[in-house]
Image (cartoon, rainbow, N blue to C red):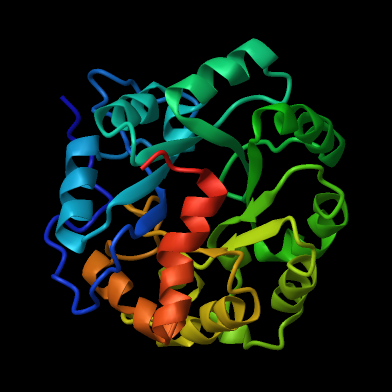
Length: 290
């Protein structure tokens, strides 16, 4: 039995924001249950279970109908827990895998048939390793055969460095959590300017998730809103939104997902922007079956 502390708020508030029909959470995770899906021994994070049933209940409460579950380093390269969750809601849930750069085409095809549509790479100080840019670009050339994409999670001080290579990628590239910029440094900080420059490439998308991570304030994390809103208003057709549930490696008490949902009205202040962010962009990019 897993007795480790859970990383999510077990009693989120009901948001006042009403999701449009077909709304999608493009960034969340599942952990375990570890008795069935063991955690990778090399993972620095060994959290309490956050199984698919808890995720489904949150989505049903929030009015979220579609979802992209992102494989976490908690499970390493074994994507079975995510695949199991996708199989439970096969038309409306998809996944992004963790796989090595030398993964075989057969293994990519197998994951595609399970509902995966891309591979995530981490370049964070608290996470081990990280493929070289040459490895990423070579893999990208292979991913194009499957209509897959690269998803990049990186420290904000790496944006300018990684941008040179990512701009050359032959497949779409999704940047996680607004590039993990530090909201206390203001909109004119170089990492955010580097992100804006990178986004001028039409094959780049960005997730306006993680306001609670960029913020240096307590909830409702208002100092992060201008960053997300700038991205939404500047690149309305290439922004995605996600809860980041169950909020692994968060610096404080688990955020209230109802509060995070209510930020959407400030991030995307018009119905058209909300429709693009929550429905049209993810439907087009991930190619949901329903």
